[in-house]
Image (tube, rainbow, N blue to C red; front, top):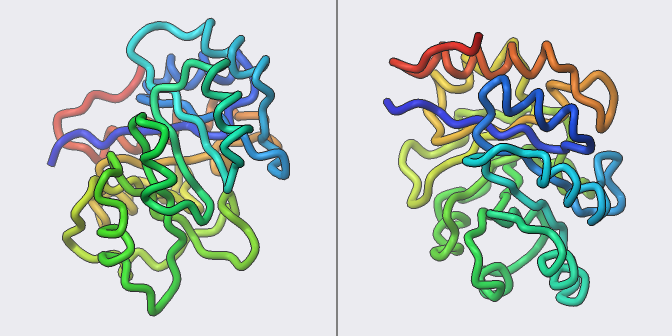
Length: 214
């Protein structure tokens, strides 16, 4: 099993972004969804990205954004990867000619494999917890046994992950990557740097051959 990657999402300030990178995060996420308590402006995201060292993937999260809104953000913010958390079709996601991942909210009875196959152009799929009317960031875990053993795309696991349960999640699911937001926060939109370090250390300790952060 190769080392599992970590993404810290819902970053709203430079200090939290740099703490995530120092702890060993592979990617950081910016929420461009006005209804989220972790939403950032174009100006905030640009300032944070300017402060980052090289080789850190920057991800923009969108929920049913209009073409006008999304286009304006992409013109202004140098994002490496797009993450679609709404009802976007594969055609809508790939219409931006940029690498993207599609978030799917999981509940009992879903045909997860078929849902993943509906996005053949995705770089990966993110599985999150289904809560009616909430596109993500619920802080609740779902039943990991619902995930098929084999999917056609790299799997990013999200939904209720914390420093305390992420090692068990990695051992059970064996994802390509894990994604956390609320599980490493001091308050909504503000990260707890000690929790970030503990989270990434737990991920690394569950990935053979990967050293823990110092």
